[in-house]
Every structure is written in structure tokens, then in C-alpha cells.
Length: 285
Image (cartoon, rainbow, N blue to C red; front, side, top):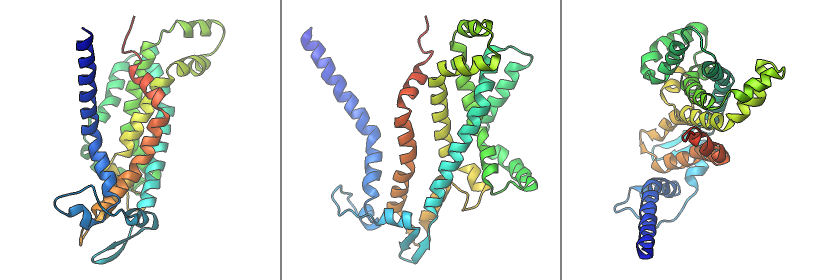
């Protein structure tokens, strides 16, 4: 029986290593590509042995890309800053609006409550192209085209439904008895919400906020249509690497590495809350 148990552990370890290798290999290969020239990347057969270069990263930081057709200007660092600003601000606004709304939907039953909640969730289901035409017309009439405020507003279609429905589930899993005792002690509804409900649901709120940040960071269509180059995030700014002289694979790889770093750092920082939040409510009783 001990031999069987040892064999199972070894087999499980091998299978786990294969799964990790399968998912991590593309990231590893992109990291290697970011230190190569186009000629090294496109050679056949491909090889992990090459002379590394930092030219791709230097081009991104300095904003000057050299191609066979000449020198081109890049706005990558501006695009990276735009992504940080848009995603962070959009998630912050969605948390301020979505967490109290989620608590209200979880604790209070009112007429058309479920219909309103489902309508908000349906915004997340709707294809972006479905709302882009009316949005572009409204934004033009309101003067919000190519503005940070306009993009943060439209990003609420991504963040707010996600935070509302995820956090609502966490509030529903929390027992209301502690809140009732707090209210009996003379505290107001807002004080009970701020001092009791929010701290207990903090792992779920952090998990929802992180997921909303990732979805906002990866958004492409809204910024492509509603903003110009100086307001666009890295997802749209990456189009600059497709030039008349060819595709700059090395600089695309370097841009991917640099654009992944903020979300990776945030995920590592919020890892404890993310694990607790995603497992909250999974086991009851």
C-alpha cells in the first residue's frame, strides 16, 4: 500500500509539472523573444540559444523604434500610463458605487430589485460592438470623446456589473446576526455597513476588484473607437508595432512583458485576499 501511495504521489507530481509547463511555456517563450532581434526570432528552426539584446526595451522606454524603413515614434510609455490610470480609476469608481449597491441587493428586498440587478448584469453580457455606435454619438454630443472621464465612464460597463454580482454573493453568504446586534446597540445603517459588513467581505471585495482590474486592463474595443493615440491603453497601442516594413515581434514581446508586470504585481500583492475571496462561500455548514 505504501508503494502504491508513493507511486501516486510521483505520478501526481509529474502530471502537475506537465500542466505547469504547458501553461508557463508561452510566457517563457515570450520572455525569450523580448531579448531577441526580429532576425533571431524568425530564424528556422527556432532556438533558445541567442545573443540577448535590450534594444527592444530601450525602444519602448525612449519611444523610438528603428525599422528597415527608418525610425518611428512610439507612445508605449504613455499607453502604459493610460492603462494604469484608466484601470485603477475605473475599478475605484466601481468599488465606491458597486459595494454599497451589492450590500443593498443582498440585505434588502424591494420591488423590481432582481430585475434591476439582472439588467446591470446584462451590460456585462452585451457585446461591446452593440453599444459602441450609440456611445460614440452620445460621447460626441457631450464632449466626452477622447477624454479620460469618458473612458472611465464606459469602463463601468466592464467593472460595475462584475463587482456588483460577485460582492453581492459574498454579502449573502455572511450571517446578518452580527449586523443586527450592531444595529440594536445603536449604530446607524452606514456604520454597520462600514465597520461590520465590509471588513467581513473584504476578501471577496478584493477578489472582485482584482478581476475587474484585469478585465479593464485587457479591454481593447472601447478605447480603440472612443479615444485617440494619446489616451489609448497598451492593448490598443500595441498596433503601432505592425508597420509597413513588417511586424516587430521582439518589441511586441517586450511590450507584453512590461504590460503584464502591473497586473502580476497586483495579483501577488492581493494573492491572500484573492484565494480567500474565491473560496468564500464554496463550503457551507
